[in-house]
Amino acid sequence: MNESDQSARNGEAPYRRRFVRVAAEFPVSYSREGSEESKPGHAADLGGGGVRVATDEDLPLGAVLLLRFKLPHGDREMVARGRIVLSFYNAEEQRFFHGISFTHIDPRDKEEIIRYVATEVQRLALEGETAAD
Image 1 (cartoon, rainbow, N blue to C red):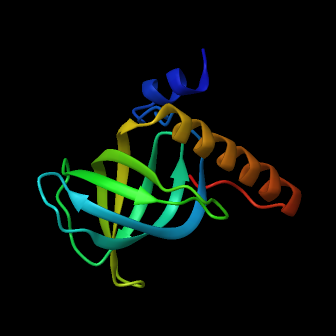
Image 2: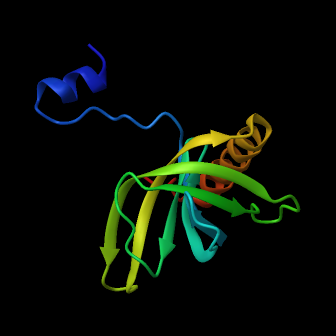
């Protein structure tokens, strides 16, 4: 029996994330589906399947966002569509954090994100740190 099967039998939710995420800090602009207004946010972590973005506004679960960002040390703007699957307020930072699952992203951008994350995981391992959970 694998670990996720064991967790499910113990009443815990099995680990569902398909991609490793790493802490990341870079600006993200976002707009809600159907709106032309772009607002600033900031990435908190990133993986091949999504990103966590800090914003000044509370956004509802299920909202669809159009995201624009450049990876750290990247020169090309990436554009992705995603759905908010997790939201919470961080009182210490006084910001809202939204876990966004990519629903549409150029496969080349996804591959570039996966390469970036792999490089970061390797760098963190050498420094004795861990990837974001």
